[in-house]
Length: 283
Image (cartoon, rainbow, N blue to C red; front, side, top):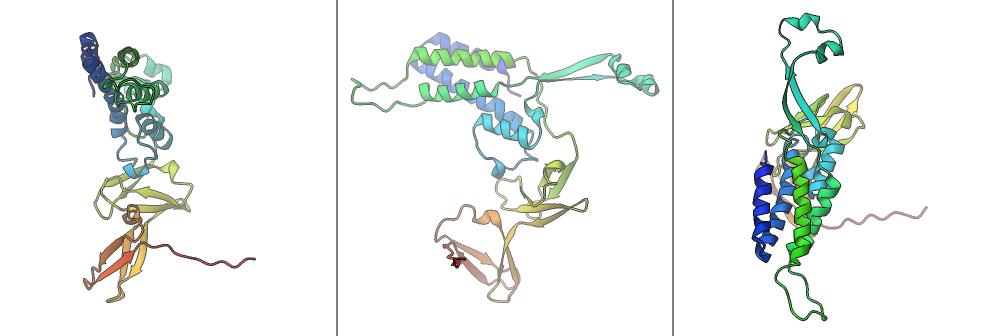
């Protein structure tokens, strides 16, 4: 877990130095820190959400999507405490009985103000991390942005970090029924909240970044039915079925050529990405 107190001290030291370069670097440190805070929370949900599922890559949206698709615990403020039940186990019946135990705090997860963090993340980039395009009215071109404006946003980011630095715990995972799939190609264990699959015909991507497999999951008669999400072709050599995962085609462009080797006879079949025209009569 990121040591925010140390990171804050590093940023404040850069501000104290006061040069254009050090203040700009302080802005970069703040932006990276915002990304790290959000991404380290996302990391605990890797087995539930594939990189291919991510709709947007920005830190705020990563956390927001995990919260909506998997569990809102990713950004809840939560304190975890434990107590020894000892010989009193049989006497613990009601909630009040458990509340009377002697608890010791393990740690607290702080909630991130995602709206504030996102605005700062964008502002720091716009003010400090790009050389601005000159206009006809500019007398010269500056290498750095406005030091005072950058300082203001850096201090606002430090205030955000100070509100989070006492958090010493990050909670991951999903509390509830999960449905697990072992990828047939890479062996990765893919987990999904069961409630997200009961709508039927859900596409579940493999969590391994370089694995093209995905699966169609349907919930029928109280059971989950899973099948590979593939395009089916026939081998021209022996007529054997050739199954190609849908994701294999996701990065191909017009006229791209995909060569498929038959596992039965080793002959090669080429698939070319081209438009398909379908004529429909007026009714």
